[in-house]
Image (tube, rainbow, N blue to C red):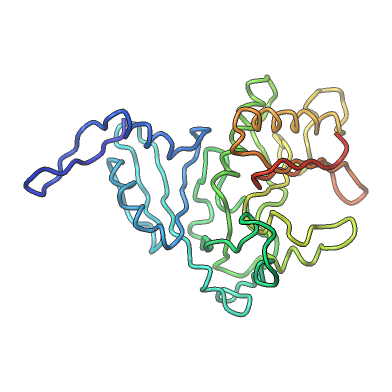
Length: 288
């Protein structure tokens, strides 16, 4: 049970059991899946960190941008992370890390979903393994370039993490072994994304740039390839459809997480995978 403070007339605070409405609010901190272990706050929302931290029985600072809290009753941990402001990106960089220019810096965004992100999560060798949910950590979503440049900067949406956790839960409910959902590609900086833009390649305004998209496979044996989910001795579109069907089920149950779903068959240069995002409108592509 999470513990919330209540102010007395003297100005002092003493713990008490939360009212039902407070308990419900605390439960939502862990997302619809109940598996989130990090929440992200834009600089303008940083004042929300302290009230949320008070719902937990223990807290400690982790650097200048992170507050680590622990529910004293259950031992469950949560990281409250304040983003580095978007304005700290100068000439396409934050420090030595190349990010590039987001689509809305070049032209009017097509909708609110395509506006510039509020800011960036700073990722260092010390915090890269911070859990963001039961199955994922910050490092899982980093752009695949600038290997030796630290700190790195990440855009990541809680809704995406929550959706991926719900997909894992749905697969497990169906009896599909899903111990490890691998992020083939998570956040892409605009500079990195631009390198693959073109016919048959990446979209110029790819959702990966906004931190709410991931290319995924179920890879329980961690060999870097999609597993044979239907146990027919082959890895092909049938296995991808099992994963895609779980995504469809999650969207039916949680319409607020609706988004894109794309099926990418194997080519000579890469194994098959599916794309998932939470753009807010239904989009489908590939042969299902």
